[in-house]
Image (cartoon, rainbow, N blue to C red; front, side):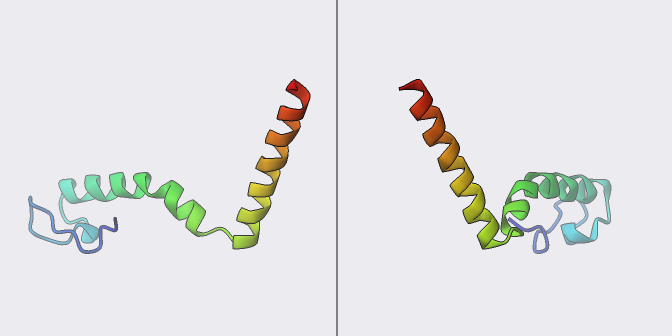
Length: 67
């Protein structure tokens, strides 16, 4: 969820403007919650495929060693 369209119940201003302490606190909280989503969204698709391939290879190696 983005905070650019949220309206603060305390001051009736957009949360993205951060006019009051409630707005600023909620804006900070939303930014921290969305960090991981933003991190994955910013990655190159080839990087994601490479990370997935490395993960699959590591699981296959671990399964082969325990068998």
